[in-house]
Length: 313
Image (cartoon, rainbow, N blue to C red; front, side, top):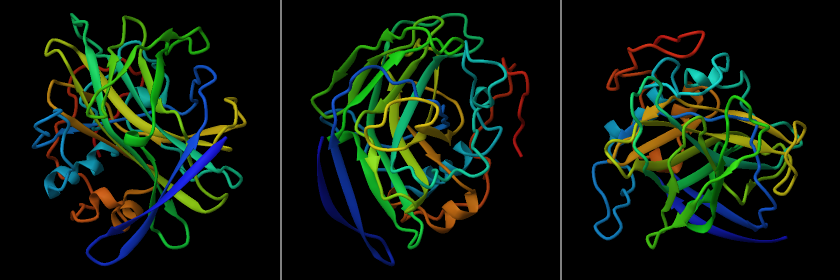
């Protein structure tokens, strides 16, 4: 395994942060089923690049503040069909009490899932566009955020899994890298999901980080598609450790969002809202984040497939 590191300066209103991007050139030896599951609530971006249709960087304060709603219990826009009813992530936002990585872990990966929408009467075959995936970790001592995964330098991989029987063989997920750097993937077939992750894990020194932040842009290609998506992250023992219960831990997931043909930015952060607002990552550093939900998003009011329905709080 070889690795390359690039130091990229980032300047916010109050400080200059040295961001380290480490790309680990590791071959994918098979489908990896992450243990942690993921979550999302979306917000449509205001503009798109003229050439490729990818959304521009989010800078609007009202858009950036949606990150709080996407990580607050009870604000899913819809629910996934075929998910285990007893799983915490069935409802949406779900995080361990302590979202920090185990002390001897040294890697992390951002992830995304797409499911058929629960209660939808029809689901048009279509595709999902995924762009601008980034994963940051927060240094424990300085509270600075370090970019460790970037879709422009990393490959998205994944498969169609049966969420109810995750040990079953995965069905191949067709992936097409676009000229603008985005990734086009098949929509989830009936009874299965799209589970995707950045293949080269981001790395950090053991004990050096206390939180993770993931941001991904997604949209459907067909207006008749009825799908929901979420994102999150998994901690790993090392950049190349094999998948098993001892080698990875879920950092959590955020709420479900119903995708449309307009770009949605999906957000996930581990840890508490107060800690996140006090030290936001670079993509949100110029925006004033609220300390609680502001009510700009409507939570799902229809029936839920989950055994325990959560309400906004």
